[in-house]
Length: 314
Image (cartoon, rainbow, N blue to C red):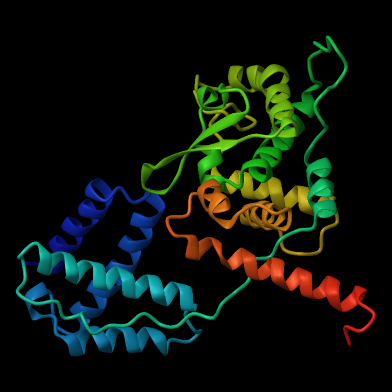
């Protein structure tokens, strides 16, 4: 089979049958486009002509690229190539899998960066005004407050649920109409239910009541919860810029991204005594091994406290 057709078939398989996310499929498409182009330069355009030596040569060339390819990107590249050939062999399109001996690179363990609770509170306060607490406060927000109410609700929800930013920006208004829980659609279109605390609930209610109706009038009707200044659904990139701007206003010197709030959510839960398997469910991790990296963060924090507090620690 022509390699271009083989790649198309594989991408359809992982998108439709395996239900992988749009972002994952796009990443695999980019990886395999580079792979097919490299094979074409070697004079190979049929999947039956790919040998273990060619597969190894491609990975070796990418491994030695300058500037160096990140270990995570190289691991995903290998996963893309192995997935393609494994699919072709399993479907009977090819007799053998030339990537069967390929082993993923060993990646260094990188501990996620979490904010302190004080830093999170400073970030939330910098995002926008807190929701009104006065009884019967029905006054509309000033034009400049509309986006502040939205930004505060966005960050409160990210920290309260530990959801990925892609999951939050894809929420519809109906998804938050279930009291103190949130229905989140994660990777592979898998749904999970996540509790929402009172602070985030109040921020979302204030945004829905005082800001979203006006933002909605500025654009075409949309069911999405978070809208941009012109009424269109908020994008991941816009959410990233909102968080970055809030971090600057809060004078947080550490790099802060949407995932920083997810890391902080998990770390603070574990530090508060939550079971790792509960945190796994809340984060939507397929394996508890993925969640356990946060236990290392908590152990490191315990060591620091011990070292600075115990009279005979040193």
